[in-house]
Image 1 (tube, one colour):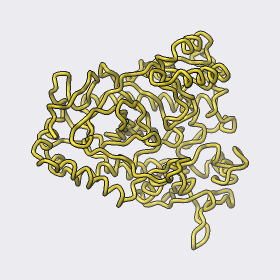
Image 2 (cartoon, helix red, strand yellow):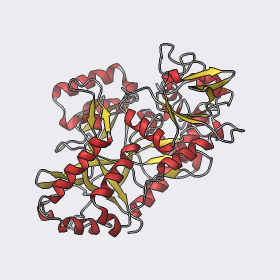
Image 3 (cartoon, one colour):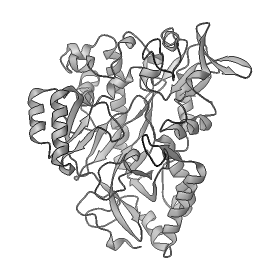
Image 4 (tube, one colour):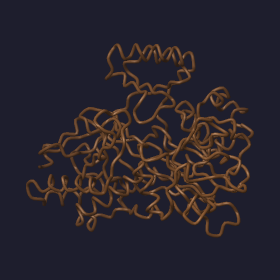
Length: 480
């Protein structure tokens, strides 16, 4: 396996520049790979995949007839991020999370941004993630979005964009940590030669973030991870994070409201819980406040939360910022709340709820990517240039019937990174999901790296694991 045959095919490549030279920080890795004997790299790839099986690093796929559990595909060639690029990512995400937190708080209180005409009130009130029961709530320390995963992409010119935000229950960080451990065992010498920023302290930082949210007076707060159960697609992550933090993993039936507090059933009786890292959607948290048919939550939980006797991460109501139509207004949020221009721009977005923009979208479906504002995982999406005429017609009818439910964006020429394909390397499109922690009122912490997702199918732009995507370890360089 040799690099001279590798073809970037005109895309921005994360490993090589337009002249075919290694990008900043990539040279030590490429030198080490060149020293490997024939077949050794494939052998290490197989060893990494076997490690994933042995460690149980899997995800669940809903509605799959062949079985629900799969290994998370992994490519051993890491993605390199220069120190210069990361400085922009870190600053841009801190700015973004700060503004989004102020927006969520404003939406559930005075709605000043709506009154100022910066975002349409109807757009906010009609959002699926807007929860009227959260009006007037103020979470501990005034922070709503404690754990965030924003998806970043790079266009053909090398510029980074934020594709979407995930504030309710962002997943994937467990794969970041496991990818790093597997790759350390696969290429130990490369880590010695390269200056890669560590990610191993994320569980301890997450625990500190959660503990900082605890109600006043809790000297040694009890933290739990609330999971929907073993059939959830991210159940591996729920168990992994609970284990890494040294806290209990619980389901709704393990918790009960008693004497005005949330308590956990244990073999020694009921134990008070101070902080709940919830990995279930808002609607299922409390059947007395939200969905009455929910069997996943805790009856009466929201009453305890309103009284300030338990903290929830992320706070209920953060889903308003996950709405892809609301996402389009983040630049306005940053100007309104911070008086600044956005550092990491959004992808240009057309609102199908707007008559003129909707007509443009309908006339250019063969050029655009159309997304349902409330779907995730690569579902509810039309990649116009790759879709059939029948698929475009189907989406046109859906847009005309429910215009508020759709947005459209130009199809970016997503950057690529090399992956192992049998006996050679090929480029595959990638994105990046960094993780941000925000818990004590200080500046947010941005994990130096994140989940690089890879569209393993040739030519595909869909990187989601549920759609056949895989992942890579992400190396953020200490310096260029």
